[in-house]
Length: 404
Image (cartoon, rainbow, N blue to C red; front, side, top):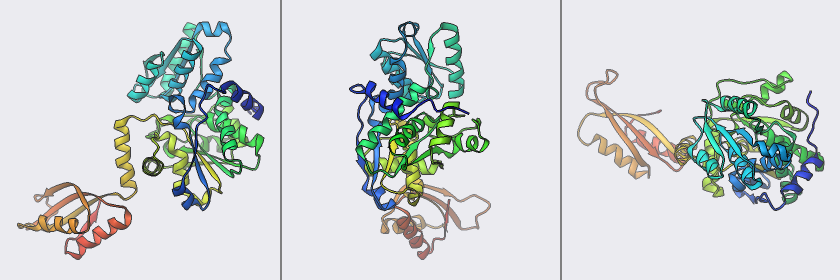
């Protein structure tokens, strides 16, 4: 199934087409990751690409190869945001009319950015699958050319130019780790890397809550998943395509999954340690390295694939990441119902340097003995060791603790 239509030579041709158009994004060394892995780890910063994502590369290659007649009909796409922006900017640069269908839940900054590039962005459907159906129907009704987010040789070749760049920037790379949704990026990167350096290990990483490739590879064909619930909207794709399935099956060495906690920890890591703003989907490769650092022979290049994140979601994810990293601590204590008890608890917390974020009292619950008060506290700590010290100090002071 699925002849490999995108070769290393195809990716090289796409790179020539993108010369002076796409940014050659930086490769940044991460000392913090290197210490965990035991060798060099670099981040390929596609969050700094035009439109904040690698998607611009594939969109520009695809649109630039349309015939004059096809360009005159305009193009249509469906996207949760990054492909939409890539198509919109490429269309503006090439003088092509673009219509983009986006899920009603698409982050507002992505919708606004798509419109700012000149595309007609239409919100339709509860998820990307519904938006894709609307885009295909629109193409049939109007004659506009449908620009698939990953299932086309030109798109795959364009995305693969990321792989050529990272090989030039890190010639001795041993492992390339790539965020993966529908598979366009990892297909192109694998085609480029395996063509030039067959011994390099290529690892695809999906959000566990939206991982279509493991089941598809087990079945030997693309198989849809349902009920996707993940913060990583950019890689929440229900099924790989025939082309991307074939590339991953034949060229990718391993597919791994990461949890929502892994994603939030990695996003926080990128903010704090790498000084990079990255969306949850874009940080999946970093999440995999953080979750199991010994699984990736160095030198490692992890592709950071997108930087478009709603500030409201960023706040929530940072809080989630701090909780996952042991920086937030929720405790329940039972203390005597007498003046000064709460002050005693707070004095212990102050003594060990825990920052109190929230406090609640409960004195009427039937689970409590007479003369008892239940106190709920949410604390900010410096990490797991500090959190353990906080609990120890409270219990030593005579305040039994239950962690939520």
